[in-house]
Structures are given as structure tokens and as C-alpha cells.
Image (tube, rainbow, N blue to C red; front, side, top):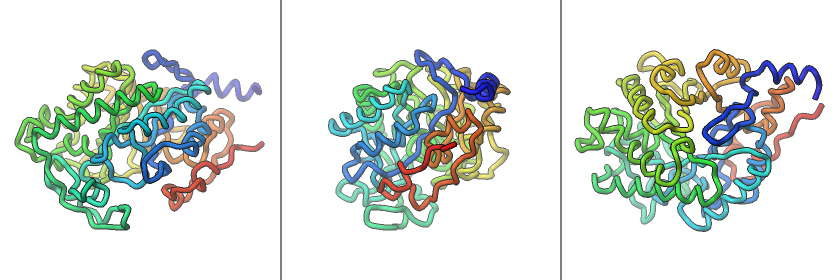
Length: 372
């Protein structure tokens, strides 16, 4: 290690260790969940995926790509699952190679809700949602090609606890597979986010209406179900208060997400993962919510995400706005992102989006490590 490198490390908050519950993170650089579509038609993790994650093991924490909790949860081609014995066993390839390099890994649990299509669903059923409100988008990519979005089927009240149970079972399987924790995906217009937001939740039962308490109830029950298998410091929750992805954005977004963050304080979570950046789309219904907003109401660790570079991430942590920063796209094309930050090496050019979901090794595990 050169003296210059030692100076960089000694001054960098981003590259400093962090205690997160029982886990000691070697740095505060988190690999964000990145859907990459390499799990095959049966949604079973494989050696190619293990290689991909192993290449990026210098991260302080890795959050896996979004992983569906049931067949009903599916809404993306060749994304992995965690609802069968075969899937659960196969995930051990990933957890074991990361633990060999002292890298903790959380499994992100996912239900797409209305951001799906009958082509993905068993027996061609409609996707489910809090309310029968269609995504106002052009199309969705299905196994049978591009299709228009459909009007989803509104879940009956008695069906909702069954989905909560799917989350509980998935969290149990995550422990069996050797993960260090789980992240509950409550962002980006997927099912939990659809329940949280007034734009997509127009129910009149205990899970909806104009009540923030009711709209939060689904996430609350999921967290409490997962606590049967993990303690709070092994559970993270991801939210996207500014996001427009999947046709989201509600007029009462500030009140909604401050309420959500405040209520999540009750569970002593590992972290709250906030997509505070605007690079993933912004609904423009008011001012963007910031990490400072959440620091005022959430007492645990805060993770920022979306559009950060090394400089802005460093500033966010040094200023106390964030404790961790998750990087997505930079990790796609720079498997050695932490080393590049550490030594001041330039980054690889951004990856071509056409290869992100190609199902092939190209554009996945073939990005070069830095060569001096």
C-alpha cells in the first residue's frame, strides 16, 4: 500500500468501516440491488451469478438483485426466485463465495404487483394490486414479447395476509440460504409501494382509504412477519419517495414517506434505504425529498442511492446526511469499484444498456478490472 493510498483511506468516510448490528462492514460502499436477468427460465441462481457477485466482493455490503417471493410476484424475465427448495439451495453459491471474502449480503425480497402481466402469471391470471388501476405506460416486456399494460385485479382483503405469509416464508428461506439479512423492496412502484401511495391505493378496507396508517399496514405486517426469522438489525427497507418509475408519484408523498420512516423506527432496522437521487425519474409533484428529511424522523442508519459519485457520496457521509451510499450502475461496469475509489483510478465507461438484461455472460462478468 502506497503512502498516497493510505492518505486517501485515512481521510475517506466512504471507505471507513461501519458497525451495522452484528456485522462489521469494511467500508460504506454498498452494491445496490440490480436486476440483471441471468437466473434462467426456472429462476434458479447459478454459477454465473456467483461469479458476478464475487467480482464485486470488495463492497462493504451487497444487496442482491430483486428476488421474487412467489410465482404470483413475478414481473420480469429471468429474475431469480426464493420460493422453492432448488432456488434456496442454489443461492448458497452466492452467499458462500461472498462470505469467503468477508462480505455480508442481504437478499432483496420482491413482489411486482401491477408491474407484471398475465403472460408471467400462472394460468394467465391478471397481476394483482391494491386497486384496479393500470400503469399509464407504453408496454411491458413479457416472455411473449412487448405487451400493453393490463388493468390489475384488486386483491381481496382476505388475500393480503397470504402474501404477507409469502414474505415470511421467503425470509425464512433467505436464512436457510446463508444470507446475512434481507431487504424488503418497498420502492419503484412495486406491490408494497403501490399500497403505500394514495395514487395506487384507493381501497376502502383496513389496508387503504385516506388513512396513512391503513396504507402502511401491509408493509408493517410484512416487517413483523419477517421478524419471526430475523431480528430488526438484519432487515432493511427500501423506499423511493421521489420516484416516478412504474407510473408512481402521489400528491401527499411527503406526508406519506415521513410517516413510513417514522413508523419503521419501531423495529430497530439495519437501515432505511432511500432512493433520494432523481436519476431514476422524478414525479415533480413538489420539492424532492432529501436524506435530511429522513434524518429528522428516522433514528437508524440511512442509506442514500441514485446518481451518487465518489465525491457526492463522500460529502453525504461526512456531513452526516447518510451512513452508507449504494451504487448501482457504476458497479455494473466496475467490479472493482471500491479499489478504484481507494486509489483514485478512473472508472470504466458506463455499460451499454442493451446488455444489461441480455441473459448472457457478455455485459455481465466481462468488465475489466483496473490495470496500472
